[in-house]
Image 1 (cartoon, rainbow, N blue to C red):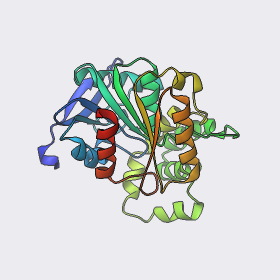
Image 2 (image 1 turned 120 degrees about the vertical axis):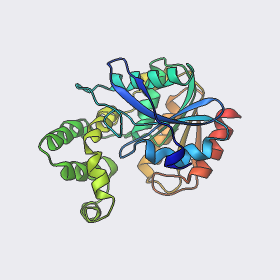
Image 3 (image 1 turned 180 degrees about the horizontal axis):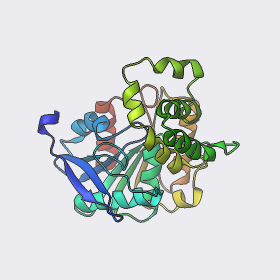
Image 4 (image 1 turned 135 degrees about the vertical axis):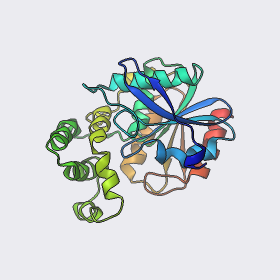
Length: 265
């Protein structure tokens, strides 16, 4: 699947914000909900791997790519964005979310959207005792972005949310990817808001009735794998699956094969 073969559609969310998406494939609808530093281009490999069995909707979450970003931001607005996309997909869809996108997909399902099945990859909750300092991350990121310090906002997120060491984060500034990360810096405020202080929302997770699978990578740090297990425990009837992979990622073909098996049976 190349850029030349991708048609871009748009839907209008409840607050009037335009949300851009790329449909591909054929079969039951699945919406791919990206996490931090993701837009619809970063889910294309997975979309291509799923397209034989699903009609795949990769989209730009608000504040990214070709989607709008109407102020003020609220997590509920992103849930409404997903409702509009599911409407465009025929009124019912599977959801696959990665990282903060997994939290968003779970919250949308708990809110009662018509979700046929839910797949969550490493929602970045903090399980066990923690200081709740994550609640301060979104305001701090907003302050940096407003001051025009996008690079500092990216550093702050990579250090405080992802957990990368300072020297590794500073070294990334010289990498070719850095301008891309800075471009997406304003959307990190959204990701941090979705995640909140990191505590799993037990009541909302317990209210999910859609068939759910929660996945992680064997190459991810233990705190993400613990979060995956805690999420699976909190959602009634959820299955936990670990896949061979790297840091916070699994190769698209391997992930697609599992999603076919787990969602379609």
